[in-house]
Image 1 (cartoon, rainbow, N blue to C red):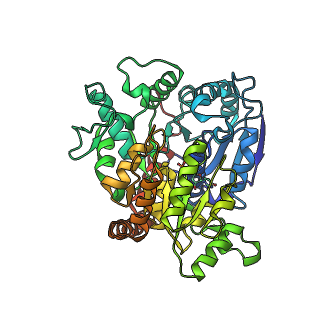
Image 2: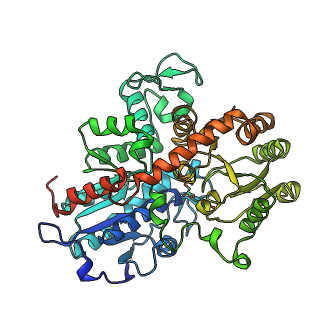
Image 3: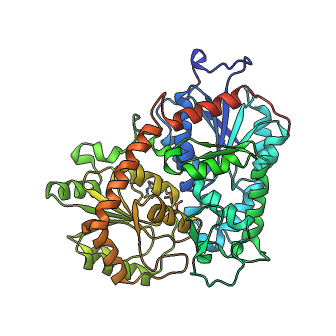
Length: 486
Ligand code: UDP
């Protein structure tokens, strides 16, 4: 275990709450990009409020974390060894985006993280000042036991919306998924008038009256631990989903703090939309390409399915054909496969196989649409950029996010045939792209996206924004409680 102090906190700037202790937060993100990125944004917000931070991670994830913090941040990064010899997981893999298959290997990977617990607890024991609170990922369920052992209030972070949290809970409590309906038949969610889902929106374990298996075991561990926690930090804002924020808080079980969109945390800092503002010669090729499209007066569709989606070669080929036939210009960020696509789409489209600055791309003036898997970070980033979406959910709670985007806030259009097990035909994609980029429906969702962008900006506004105030409340609630009894 190694400890690196990135920079010592300036004593005069530390927050000294009423009790007289320094406010010190422990952050422990899960080892996947979609879970780590928003926690690092939360780190920025806490640093701006002069909170002392300690961020726990593992050796291979440390460089990403160190590079994402603002220069000179008063944060310590503590490295804990990642477990070795995990069944079926190649040595050296410490992040889900490096797994050969997220679908097959996730439970083994996630369950093995429990082996970090002894090192985590010896580090916690020695931490000074004593932590005032901990924000750890819901997937690191065992951190709840550690928090209880040391009397540290734990806030859970899942990186999900209030909507998907509320709806998933409601269908489970009311046992809505065990009826005679077929996988795609609509079911009304009785607790939320107007909200409808279908069985295929949910994972297999949620649809079985008698679920079993490692994935279900893992989910149960996370859920049970979360229910014992102090509360949850949500990457969302009140104005985006008021019914669901109120619902979760109204349960009276725990506190839910909607403090986002967290991606707005670095708008004033050094690395937001970095690629878009670099000098021309040092801009990545895709930003230069976007600049050219802008100069030609063209609109571009951004196509990206997050950091871990698995897409078959057959489906990639169909996407390429659908995009070509839609006759729009597009920038497609692809993680795996798709050999030869680059050549095929030259001129109208650009295909990138590297890690990109997604927020920089969404913020580029010529990007006018986002074909997305609806990972929650991507939804929030699209909202903040005021870019309407084409919703193509693939796994996890993405089908519920897609419903939120297309049916609730109406800032996007659902791609027909898309879903957990769906295959999208080129014609369906072409139709959806044309609707979004050129159609009347596209104009309507574009208008809504822009309105939500403004609401998101206001929510994060210093002093008056709903999320700004909610984070202040969190600090107020927890910085005076250096120790709680569980
Ligand atoms: N991301 C990025 N560059 C990439 C791929 C992904 O910056 O090349 C970021 C993206 O902006 C988002 C996160 O990675 O913040 C992906 O999270 P999301 O919830 O959208 O999807 P997941 O990867 O968890 O499925």
